[in-house]
Length: 192
Image 1 (tube, one colour):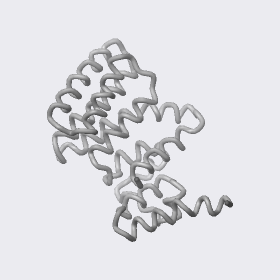
Image 2 (cartoon, one colour):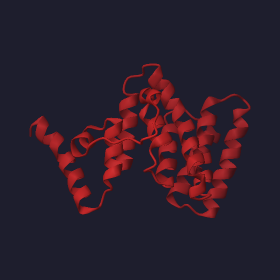
Image 3 (cartoon, rainbow, N blue to C red):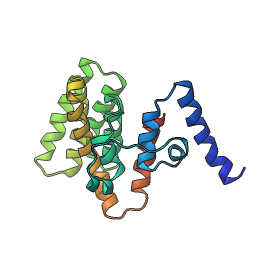
């Protein structure tokens, strides 16, 4: 199998899912806007219209979480947890991430309360100036904000973007592969 054939398969699959109505083309366009190769081949990249030009240099995580709009609350919380897990965590941080993931699996009031308690515990560690706890607390905060309904969509996305800052720091420091990892992970969420 040639490289061209291998690359054409996910593109054809995305196009077929768009045609069948299984996948919203806007989500594929957003993945293309981030630079995800199969999406670039499947759809014309169309980013959100109100993105300032200076934001083009932002990492994929910041761009999609601030201006994506196509992500569900559960997807936002899932991404926040993914980004938070990229940073070594203490017990409180791991508990906050686990609570946020539990809410994403079952967005009920019981899990929201557990995420809120885990956020408070991780926030207590913040007093000790532990940056990782800040990131984990942001992931739990995204779950708490997301469960408050669509009114809290911006708050959930903002909390998830805070969780992505740790990944951005690695990207800004030139850590190889971070931007590619972010693009790939977000595209997986967008394109299923």
